[in-house]
Amino acid sequence: MFSKEWPLSLLDVAIPDWHWCETYGTWLPVAPAAALELVKHVPPNEIRLLRILIGLRNLPGRVLGRPRFGKGLNGSAPLYEQILQFGFCPLGENEGSEVAFGLIDQSWKVSGGERAPVGDAIEFAQFSEPGFVKIGANLLARPVRGGSFLSTQTRVLATDKRTRRIFGIYWLFIRPFSGLIRRSWLAAAARRAASGQSDRQ
Image 1 (cartoon, helix red, strand yellow):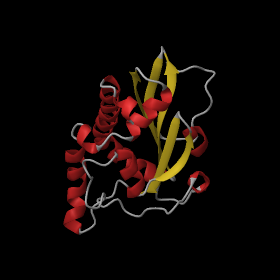
Image 2: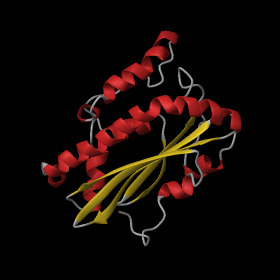
Image 3: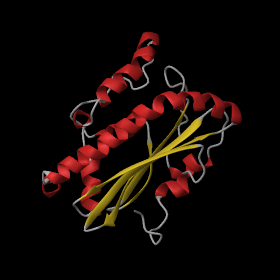
Image 4: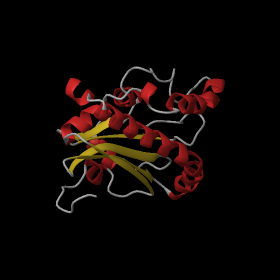
């Protein structure tokens, strides 16, 4: 699906190595810039089961008074904007084709544990303190067959062997749900493209 002539993605620069990686994609009948704008504007209410899954993930932390996602998600505000508000830092943008964002934390812990305060792609790439995972993700649109192949990739790198073992167990549990959310996010963008919403962005 991808051409060998395409440039490196922003994730290839920010997190070139990883221990876990998931990629999902779908075709949209619009230009790449329009596809990217569509997926950036999708709200949680259009993403199947998202708010339920986030609520369940928040529940143990609520009991301890430290919910991982704070008060939860606003159903009508774009998910991409809320991801940045939650604490993901921007890792760059290739206008009209890609945005990338990242988070460094201890997400396997009930409340999400500590979070490393990185502010940009350079700090994200250079971080190496043990006891954390570096999570990098993107939204990427490439021209394909008169439209676009819209994809999202998530890469996770543990900063030490012990964390890799612990997070590996956590990943086995969350991977199916994480994948469901990402596929549903892309599907919502495809529905918007089919309904002509790209003309109204």
